[in-house]
Length: 293
Image 1 (spheres, rainbow, N blue to C red):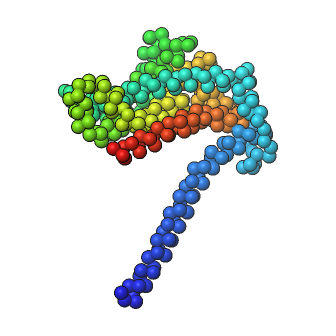
Image 2: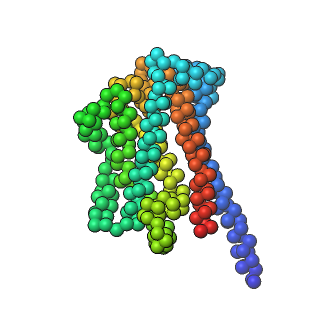
Image 3: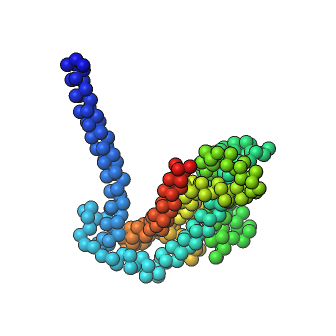
């Protein structure tokens, strides 16, 4: 090896280290930008000063009264009731939507029928349009069914969030396509029905996509504002947390409820975080099982 080649070999580790340093600095900057709003909202939730305008990033005083007021002061905004409404809607929507998405995805991946390709093309075209374009029509349909008043609003929201979820089959179908069909064929030869293949064989092999579907199906109604506002209207007893947090920022409430808004933003992140932490272990188990298989 010549002296020139040795010099080039010595420069390569240096260039590699400089490149890694630049990448890590860039990622650190992105992490800082992403984390700062979260830190700010958590600090604001413990802030003792009232109002929405402050001159410093860190609060001058800390208190738990914002969380206490959030769950005890029900004279103006009943946050516990909103939290309960949203939790009920999100849980039932999650179960129904997960079943719809997985069933449609499995059917399109494994079965062959005459309307299969037209349905997938139609679903792709409909997916180009935002769902809220149909919210006025959906409201009048629900009103005609008697689901737009009182406690029936919960059923209306569950129907709205769940009914069209079968159109979002693309990701789950792509996952099912990666599972060898020979496994299904072997089970059918052994006498298994299509339902048994779906529940006993395909589902245990599909934990990652099941967890993804569960999380997205739960988060969608949990954070939605547009459909909830249109359907709930002035029915305060049926408000969801998104409507409650939005009301806290109205000009007549913002001075006294702004710090409670920050506390509410922290509180509504807890169910999502707990669900993710609980289901993460199943996701890891599913991935490890897929690697072993």
